[in-house]
Image 1 (tube, rainbow, N blue to C red):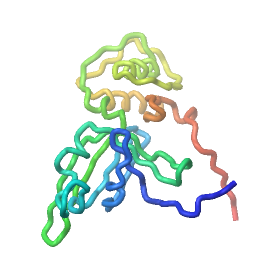
Image 2: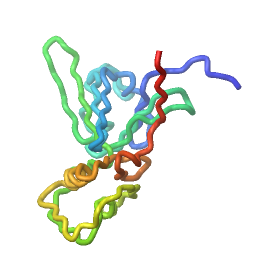
Image 3: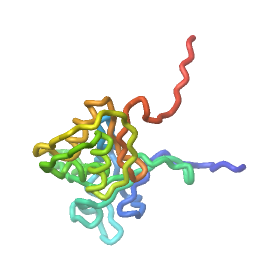
Image 4: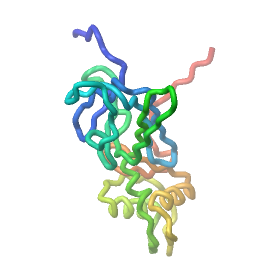
Length: 206
């Protein structure tokens, strides 16, 4: 089996399914965050001034909405060729321009995974004769998402959602039964911690 003689450790950015090498070229800082409360987030900082293929000289970049714009899908992966690992898949939720004296202009991109839909939806709703797992399935269905649930718990006569975002409400329900919420493989996951699968760790003493 042959191995590649050269590989790059730089992250690969895709916007709307197309690889955009200029984003890797201009990247200054990349942060990806995720907690047990769900909603993976991305913050990427880019140089906002440089060469452009369709322009004869260096110019301002990424602020015209042509490449980066609200709601566009962004994927970030890292690793060689067929072994690349996806680090983030989500949608642009914010853009910030930074202009400081004696510094190159910068653009900061903010993105969130599909749980952003739940974060942005506030409602008042009553759930009757349902478990927390069934409530999670119902919320996922409301947003057109598949659900992977595995959480034991009681069946409640009535549960009310009072002007909360769907994500905040789901986090609240998860906290009551020691469950976790996250989005992975195109599905909303709602599982108690003892049933969440993860990489096996081996501890060695000495």
